[in-house]
Length: 347
Image 1 (cartoon, one colour):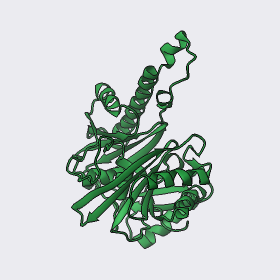
Image 2 (cartoon, rainbow, N blue to C red; image 1 turned 90 degrees about the vertical axis):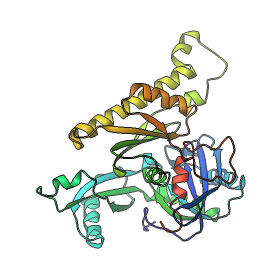
Image 3 (cartoon, rainbow, N blue to C red; image 1 turned 90 degrees about the horizontal axis):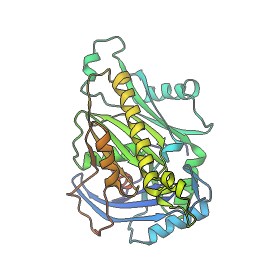
């Protein structure tokens, strides 16, 4: 696991994107012939029983392997080359300012920062970095002191956790080509789907137990956070014994509203932090792009749109050819594995 967790890639004409959460595995298969000729060949989602994956960590590799195998066997997936999303709650993502020098020299500085200055909650990191492009607002600082610095994004995750997932894939004869954070896969989907990203936008991906919130400026990555927001009670409705007094507080409907309110509060907190501390109040937020596999995601979008100032839109890509389309196909639901698969053979 000493290889790059952002850039390792094997060749393959068709590629898979695989997202694994605590409760579900989702797979998309993309066929690409050039950057514009893109087609979705297959997709599948299979629930993961409780106790197999917990907080992003694999508890039972054999059972997880069986679930992934079930998902792969449910459709005629034609390739073994797979891109995978790091479980967000296990990853460390940091943006640091370093001298704007060649990557070979920059790598040495990142290694120094990892060993001496970046505190982590784990001892066995696999990590990689990328130099973030300057946004349109950056040239204003070109003549300021320290203008020879660049912004470097460092991503790290426990080697043992990544290795557990790689072991599962390799036991199924899959070839793990790359491992990346979900924010990058969603940003790639936005770029390929030609969604409007002028100004400052939020990308929000919500599943049963947590949400990834990413801020991009003029299409470029700025900051990402993973927060706990639980819609679980809504999905797993309590059994028959009811208590009328408790029902008013713990009904599926109220639980859903509570989770939505928690998410909205987290979004407001991050937007305020960015606006006043990083953006210095110069630009307002343009839009919120929403995806995920929570039930009634359209309802969640409406609740967010009602409470938040930026308009809220669901991920969409009407022009994407889908070979096996059905009523269960949903861009918001499959946004992460779709974005992963879009890395393609030339990523």
